[in-house]
Amino acid sequence: MANKTNTIQELNLTDSFLFGKVMRDTEICRMVLEKILNVPIKKAEIPVTKKITDITPDSGDIRLDACINDEQDTIYSVEMLCCKDKELLRKARYYFQCNIDSDIIYTRETCTKLKKSYIIFICTFDPFSDGRHIYTFENRCLEDLSLTLGDETTEIFLSTKGEKDDVDDEMKEFLAYIENSTDDYVQQASNPLVKAIHKKVTEVKLDQDVELQYMTLLQRNEQGGI
Image 1 (spheres, rainbow, N blue to C red):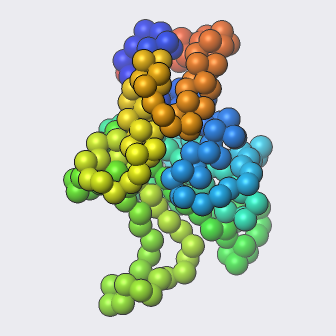
Image 2: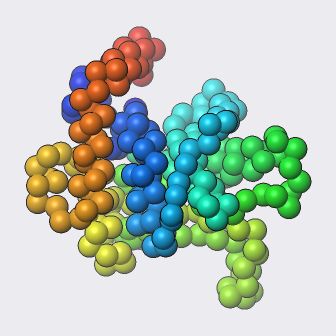
């Protein structure tokens, strides 16, 4: 868990527990994806049969937090990352893309049925130390960068520590809110997306069942020496 706090009220969206609860609201998730990808997404849903696999005991926070299917037959995986790991990219390749694609194979579909996928990381650090708010990767030919592999996989890294003027003000405000998910910040924010997310954050924090889940998880982590 990202934040060492005693109550759910103190959490920012950098905390994996709160992030997961909020992003499971399909409308919030749809709005976030629209903003990140800058394309209209009519509908989003979280598959009921979503398969999550802990392949090794040290997998840590590398897991599928949300896997959303839109009507264009595209899969999105969204993950909050708060700790820079020198093996991050290899772990991402193994845990994320492997899990997404194996779900298709698991259902005995052929490789031709593999869906277009976007793997999105929201980072509280600059993963490539270039000062950008967003880094987008897809497979291209080194000899001719205009030639794409066509495997329909894209990896996007968002950074809350970006410094360049590479995204619009709404995106900057959204990324700032990730680390400052407070009433005070939202009062001065102009971004409708931030206000919508904060409404859900407030709702989650006021849910007594969710608070009990968080306290139980916190107690379990403390007993485990985390």
